[in-house]
Length: 396
Image (cartoon, rainbow, N blue to C red):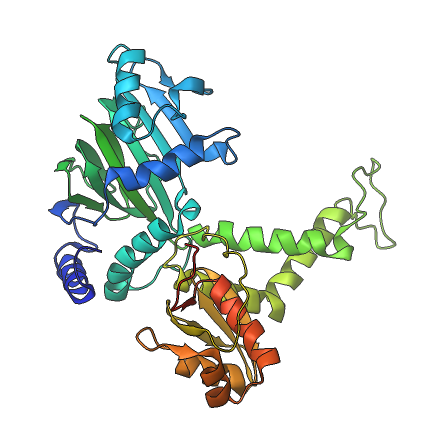
C-alpha cells in the first residue's frame, strides 16, 4: 500500500462514517494499484485453455457479448494493457469493447494480498463479510457494461477506477431517484445494496470491483452447496430409483408414498443440516474467509521447502484462531486452515510476531516442542504463507 496502515484505517473510518449504508457516492481513494499489475492476471485468465471460461466476458459496442472472443482476448503479443488496447483499436476499427474477468486474483498472491489488505480496513470499520465476495477486473473502451441494469441488486459494490474514466447510472430500490456518478483514475465508486446499475466504460478504462452479498437470502446458495456435497458423499443418498410405477402403490392405511426418493432426500438434507459436523464445517469455512477478508478463491499454498533448526522465521500474516473443542483449535491464514491440538502449537503461535525473527531451534526451546513435531507444523505454516524465512523464501 502507498499509505501507511494507520492512514488507510483512518480513511476507511471517514468513508464509513460519511457514506456507508447511505447514498451512492464517488470519492477520491487511490488503492495503490495500477492497471499494469491487474493486466497480468487478466491475461492469465484469458490464456488458452481458459480454465474458468465462465468468468471471462468480452463484448463490443456494436455486437454485444461474444461467445467466443478468440483472438480478441489478450495474447502473447500483448505484453501490457496499452499494447492490448492499441491492437484492439486497430482490429475493431475503433468500435468500443469491454473485457471483464471474475475472480482472477487467486493467480497472483501478491496482488491478492494487496487487495485483501485494502478491503480489510473497511471491514474493520463496518464488519466482516460472512459470505464470499466477488472480485471483477475490467478493461473497457467506450462500451456499456450490459444491455440493461442488473436485475437483482442484493449486494453492495466498491469500484476503483485504476485508469481512464467511467460513469455509472444507478436506480435505488423503492425510490424514483436516478443517480449518475462519474469517476476517473484514483476514484472509488460506492453504492449500497438495493441499487440497479449500468456501467459505461469510457476512454482507456481499467477497474477493480468488489461485490459483497448484503441480504440473508444470499447465504442459501452457500449452505445448499455445502449440504449437496455432503449428501453426495453419504451412502444413504446412493441407489435411489429414478422411476416409479403409476398408479403409485398405497400403504396399508391407503396413503400413497409416490415420492419416496424425494421425501427421503428431504429427510437426509434436514438431518445433515442439523448435524454437528455441518456446524463445524461452517465455522471452519468462516475462519478461512475471515483470514482472506472474504476474497475467494484464495491462492493455493506454495510449494513445501526443507526446514532446518538453524533457519530463522517470523510471522508474515495474521493467524486467525477459533476454538474447536477441548484442547483443539482451527488456525486460518490467507484463506487456508489448519487443525491444531495441544498446548505446544499455541506456544508457537504466541511466539511468532511479524517484527521478530527466531530460529526454529529457539522456537522449539520456547514452545517445548520436539523438532519432529515442530518442523512439520512450521512447514504447514510456511506453505500457507503465515510465516516467512528471514533469509529468503524464493517464492511468492
